[in-house]
Amino acid sequence: MLLYILVSLFQHQAAAQTCNLASDVETVVVNAHNLLRGDVAKRALDAKKYGNLPGTKSMFKLQYDCTYEALATSMIGKDCSRRLDLNLIGVGANFKTFRVPGILDNKNLPSYYDFAVDNWSGSVTKPLDADAVYTDKTTAPFATIIYNKTTKFGCWHSYCREDKKLSIACAYEYMPQQGQPLYWADSTGKKGCTVDSSCKKVTKDAICETNVLGGEGPLCEIASHTTSTTTTTTTTTTTTTTTTTTTTSSSGCGTIPAEVEDAVVVAHNKVREELATRALDQRIYGNIGGTKSLFKMKYDCSIGILARGTIDDKTCKHSSLSMDMLQKGENMRTYYADSEPGSAELAHFYTRAVEDWKRSITTPLDVDVLYKDVTMKPFANIIYHKTLRFGCAHSYCVDSHYIVISCVYEQMPKEGEALYNLDSSNKKGCQKDAPCNKAMKGGVCSNDGTKYGPLCELP
Image (cartoon, rainbow, N blue to C red):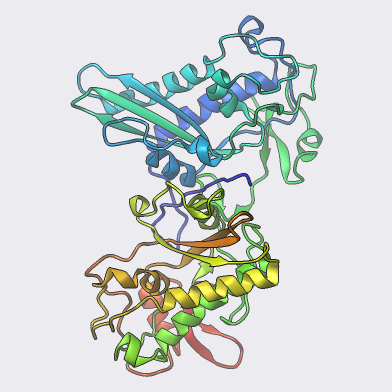
């Protein structure tokens, strides 16, 4: 199974989320990537170097994405070395280290990013075949930039002052596959797209871009609309849910089957409801207070794909990608299954996993509900009040008959911190909007039409 990861390092805010890369650097690196893609579309590349490549009327602009920026961050070690090879898990990646004379001046960062893209585009040492099929691995940096399936990417850098090194890493939505075309060679002209129709053949929401001169092309782009991924150029929306925690509306992102997604969301929020209403067994969890300001969790597509990155598909064990370094909560559970489960059985395994994580607590919580015992981490991840989004993934290994389930959470509980706000001695959770709005601006108490609560939600 092709494995792709998206990393979302955002702190949850009611407003749109932004990336960490400086805007001037982001502008330069996005333009550098899209200029190269535009040259491919227009057949403007040097034929002596790149070969007599065909043009294309359906090459898309790359959009900068915060989730890939975060993944790029994880590629760079403390000594500016390459720490993580994303190609091993199906994600496109480019990496470049420069020697920096003297002390790095931040005003020079955009130029270094420009140099990096130029270096990657220059990885072609012999002309490509006219069919634009990816066969030569040495061209991987160039191929990764122009690969037509990739529409999102993000970058980061690290400066090692003592070694006078600057490393720049970029992570891409997809990794080019050997033996497959790098793009749709559908043009013998030199203009790229000139009308929307050639772009809409790829996806119905696409249009031919309006360039700086006011004309059309050469690249396609997605028309402005809302999306669930975190980017600097689109509007972030949350997963749609109903007003109860017993039913949900699937996000539709397809990281797991819709009915499985619904089941795992319900299972997580059931634990939160029990906490808010003081319905947890006191002998196990302690005589802890309730809360009027605990929010429903919603399924997040990008975190769901990140969860896939924590699984080694070949062994059904944990991959080399650690959520600790990304300050994310993570739960994983493995079960035996005679055969690959269908959706109904999958939903059962996911629900069972949540129950097992809930039971990870071995020592009752103190009345101040501080996170002290790391053995309860799976339970803590589920109830941590700063987490409002999570995502899950699974893999089945035929040889071992194991199915592994992984869920990743927006925030990682901090030792010594309260796991939730102790603001209620009753057993009803929220009964009105005020405590929810106090905890997070715009928060309301959920209402199924017959009663309020017990969890807050963002409308």
